[in-house]
Length: 333
Image (cartoon, rainbow, N blue to C red; front, side, top):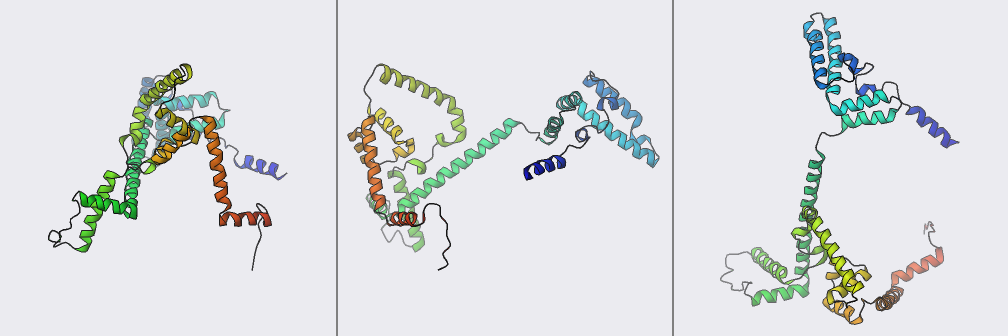
């Protein structure tokens, strides 16, 4: 019952008021009648009619305050009618309203859309949006890459290797005479820059934190998208021809691709794996579906075994056993 009352109340509150659509145009008047033209009038006819009527009824021609006020209101309606009828889109919406007065909400939407829609070319909006996204991508990519370099520079394993390589290449200044006049902070900053430079040259960072390239920018991706689509289609057709029709054996790259698809990894995730892990996958021949299913079952069993030894998991199981899933209680002890 309350639902029926709610729907009835909404219908009463939002019942369309008479003349609401006309307020977007010429009010209770007909725009064509105000300009004394027919609906078949051309733009030139409308322009001539407006000038003829405006020259006779312009507010500046009246000196009496009351007459001037009436003339200003009449000229405002006249100008509004002229603005509507000289614009093709506005005139089309107005004619649609005259022909279909019963379609209240559609007429309101058409009038509101014309008045409130931004007068900006959609292509410009799209171009600016894509440019902003590209700039954010570029900045975000370099930020993540620098974070990865800083992380490796503080990990003892990689930091010691970087310092050793820097000493072998003579990048670290150890002569106290050359360091004379520099503060401890300046010497430390110089050493950190050298370590970061060595890590950047020697470390192969892949995945999300890899060094950004031009291919990561949205603008470049959109420009090269047709080429990449054609490239993928050609690659797929070659795959079908070589391995489905001719039944050729898979090469190393094809085997890696099949394993990556079986595991559900992205290209970046798979490339970030250690080479020893990939070699183990190749030795296990995981590109064969049966071998992969056996390996996956083994991995799941190992994961469950490790999870069963976890203290948190044991506590969670005890909680479910004692309280049941989804049960809530208040303990004021």
